[in-house]
Image 1: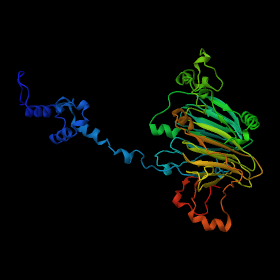
Image 2 (image 1 turned 30 degrees about the vertical axis):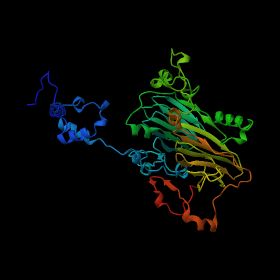
Image 3 (image 1 turned 90 degrees about the horizontal axis):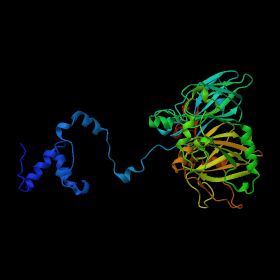
Image 4 (image 1 turned 60 degrees about the horizontal axis):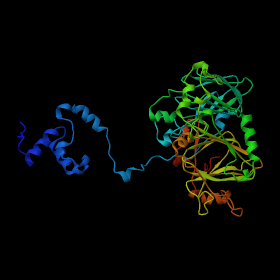
Length: 455
C-alpha cells in the first residue's frame, strides 16, 4: 500500500518520490529515473509528481509495444538533409512510339529513384501512347491531372466521365479526376502518338485517391499556341528573353494570385457525361469561379511550349521542379541540344562541366531538379520543346525558386562537346547518360561509353 500524508503535514522528500512512482506506473523504475534526469524537458519544469501520464492499468502492453516499435528518433543535424537517390538524367527515345503495335510505353524510372510504383519523377509519370490506324487504346490513372500532348496523328479520347474529345497533331488535352477508363482512338488514316503525363506517383506516395474534379476538361489547340508564340516573338525585347515561349494554363489556375483557391472547385464537382468538355454547370455564378493564380496547366502540372530560333541559344535557368522535356521538333541533321549541370561556371553565365542532351524529334529527356540548363540550336531550322513539370505544385507552395543566369557576353564562346580523337581522350572524365529502352532501365554505372549523350 502506498504511504499517505496527513493534510496538516507537508510531504517528506521520500514520500514525494513514492508518490511519483505511483503516478508513473506506466514506465519502469529505470525509465522513471531517466525521466527525472531530464527534468528540464517537463513543461514549466513542473515536479515529476505533477506530470500527467497513463497508469499501468490503463495501458494495453501489447498495443503499446506495437505502437512504440513504429517510432524513430534521429539526431537533427545528421538527418535534416537525408541521403536519397538522385534524380538521374535519362532519355526516352522517339523510336519507341514510331513503330510496333498499339501500346503504352512507360518512362518508368522507379528503380532509379527508389519508389515501389511506376514513376518518371517523384511526383509525375510520363508515357508514350502508340495507337495504330483505326485502333483503340485504354488508359487509367489514379490522378488529379492528366495531360495528353499529341506528338503526331489525329483521333479522339472518350470516357464516361468527360465524354468525347477530338484531337490532332500539336493539341494539348488536359483531364481532371477520371475514375473511368479513357479510350483513345486513332483515325483510320494515320498512326497516332501521344505524350501522356499524370501526377499519379504523388497520389500513390500519399496513399490517396482524388475525390474532386478541380478543373474542367480542357483542350488547347495547336493553332492557338502557334499564334500566340508568333505574337510574343515580335514584342520589343523578345530576343533577350531567357525562353521564347508560352506557358499553358487552364481557367482554374488563372490569376490574380490573391483570388480564392478553393471556391473555384465548387462548380466542377463530378457530373459524369454532363461534365463533357464545354458543358456549363447550371445555376453557378461567374464570380464563384476563381483561379488559384499559379498560371499553370493544372494545380500540379506545368507546361511550356518553347521555340529556339536557328543559330541561337537560350541562357541557363534552374528550378526546383523536375522537367520531363519533349523535343517537339529538332532538325534531323542534329545540332540542337541542352547543356545541364548542378552549377554555373566562374562567369555565372554558362553551365559548369555540363552533360549534353541532344534533341531528337519526339523524344523525351529528364532535367533533374535544381540543375542549370541552357538550350542551343546550331541548325538552320527552328527547334521546339515542350517540358512537362510538377511546377504547378511547387508554384502553389511558393517553393519553385526559378532563377535565370545573366545574358552571356557576345565575346564569350559557347562550350561544345569535343568530337573524334578529342572526345576519346576526355571520355573517361565525362558524365554519361543512361538510355531508357522499352522495358529496360539501365543504371548509370552500366551505361556503355558510346552512350555519352542523350542522342
